[in-house]
Image 1 (tube, helix red, strand yellow):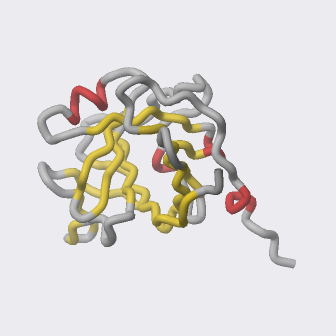
Image 2 (cartoon, rainbow, N blue to C red; image 1 turned 60 degrees about the horizontal axis):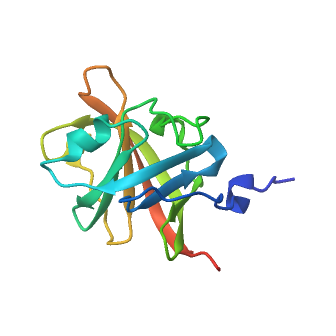
Length: 158
């Protein structure tokens, strides 16, 4: 008998969106609730370094969410551990007006370069405008990172 993946039944949690935040990224299975702030190449490090905050920015045709490994969620329970994400993990981008659902398609460990992440000699970029990559350090020197690619599923009913 094939057991269903319970991740597909995840639902977004009620949360407050902090003043000035773009929204809140939620991964219910891992108790992750991280406020997202719009970033640019000039301020990404400042946002990532800030407590209880992650950076979301354009990356290729899609977007990327960066935070330090082990950053604590706004609920004080979950931690940013991208290496623990697995395919089919559900995530939600909660904004003031709408909540979007995403599903993880792959997780990998890659090398970080100035403007790219490299796996087996190939750059990793979102392939579609609705793709979201999540990124967190895999090594203390930040030369290697974990990346999880999330594909858009749809808007959640209100």
